[in-house]
Length: 164
Image (cartoon, rainbow, N blue to C red; front, side, top):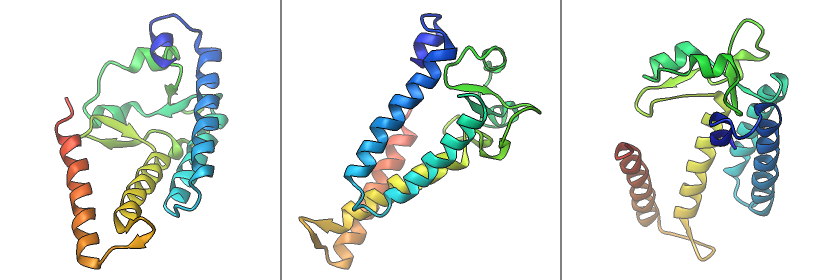
């Protein structure tokens, strides 16, 4: 929907909130079904923080232009000012809860992220670690578990490094 809004196929006033609602319902269902994974509670916290700032700002995640520039991203100012993106809006003096918006630059990834995004990322990494420590409901020996976690983390870093 975000791409369709950017291309003028959908109106951002209804496409953005509808897309966010659908994502929250689907992700919420997935989190509920996997509630036995304790690391997912970090994901729930992150989603809660992101939902708070989005609801407080009329259905759009506020994005800091200075954070985008520090992350090496250019050319979004006009789109954010006109709310031409169904998901994001420009962080300005009228923004509610600005510290929860996309204000943290990540230059290696070319993105600006929010505190909620960091909690979500930590929760997902925790799920990888939880999965690496157990096989078929039993705990692995410490050495084997550590090697498995290291292999998973190296794979994630490799995928991030190879990203175009």
